[in-house]
Image 1 (cartoon, rainbow, N blue to C red):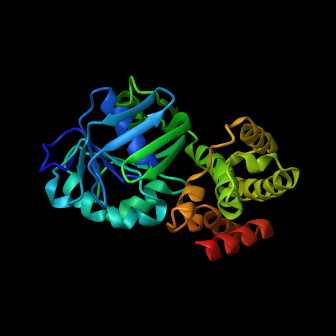
Image 2: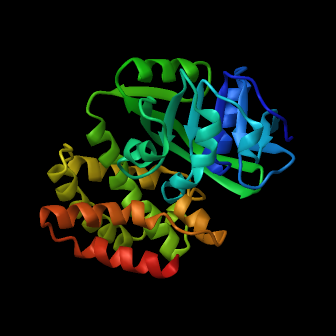
Length: 297
């Protein structure tokens, strides 16, 4: 339901994909004032999860001129679309606004800062939440509701914002390791599911698990060169986790490919390859995946 100019305060969520829609629904359910900022408007936001289907009563706005400053701005666009959020930033960011960049990859805050006024607090966030946008305004949650942010006052305030929602918010001092640990998973599950056009059940195939482990071995070497602290145990835990996931779950890159949308490979596998080049580390498997994902996008 489209709405006009909103008052200062509340939460603005930029991006109406699976993550944006689900976060908007979670916050609305505990009484937060939520505006969903979208590229193409739709009439209803409907979320389906384990408790069933429900309509989410949030404002849906497609014109940046129709909104005013918000207390919180959650950026849930794909990494490659961050610059496209700049018109929203001009309207939504005011004195006291906190911006949270909830995206895959690494360097979330660094991607957003060039498009924001100087001095605006920018909090990177890593999310574990399997959701699928099945149609405009229709979101299906497949599992997990966890986010991690850097430790500090902004992280504490963010956790308070999500109080009462299904989300577990963790604050971590070593956010570099947190971000690379998520990328350790994303650089495998996203391109493998997207390239095979299969959901998480594809990891039941021993050959795919071997490929996944090889990709992860390369990512771990690069991540540690970047200052993260990852081990082989991280890879084992992630691969074991794939086998425990519901077989109908997928990845954001798979959902994008099925819908004919551009893929996020440049900010996932591409980030691994770019960092490897900087440190002189050979990553032949990730280079091959990057080439294939680029051709499929």
